[in-house]
Image (tube, rainbow, N blue to C red; front, side, top):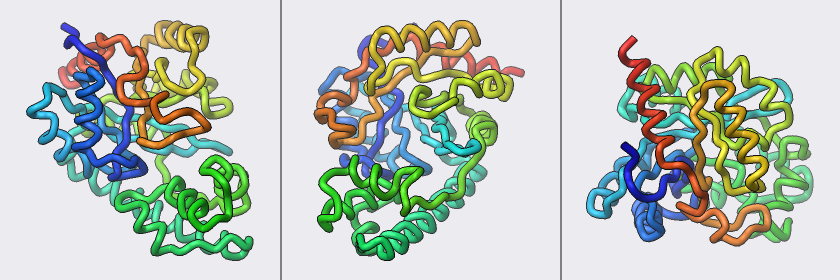
Length: 285
């Protein structure tokens, strides 16, 4: 039975590259009518327990999750792990490795930016991040230093995948991320599938590897036409059509901060129960 209220299966906190604490995010989500909320920070589950404590008095169910950046030739795709056992030692060991790779990558970017005439302080990047370090923190440092006029410009000019300061980092393969999510009692969902070139061409292989769902309802440029195309694709492959706001707490790609607030994307609430059914079937095998 679907729980009344909104669903949001893709959000971020200050523990990775969001701007709200887990408690602040939960309070905002509750205020906006969200009743099932996934915390999906990049390569960390540090915000889950605080979110659960905050949610206990607000009528919000917290779904523990992760957003993995996974590597494919010439590109990366993002994978959400949902309903994870955050205490699983295998998961935490892998997250430790991935976070260390994030630090190495960010240090490398800072060094390259210095040679490009756009120096920033490594200490300032760490201060901005507070948790798991990502490219948005480097971008914010570039903005503060006056080297760029916006976060978007920082990515376009310097730290985007084709930028002169871009540095690769340790990643999983998509298949590894799916296997890890399953090993930790969770499900795996392909995130924002229209953002990467050629991502949908990989879908057959991902389904064979056990993919559970695909993000069809998403804030950025996913109008009714694209959403229905993705939902039809999900049905053809036997996947759950999920969605989320991808809320970070700041303006992204020129959109207003309200355009992707928690609960801003209309997501069929029954998708949560469909994911739980897949999880239960896998556990019963």
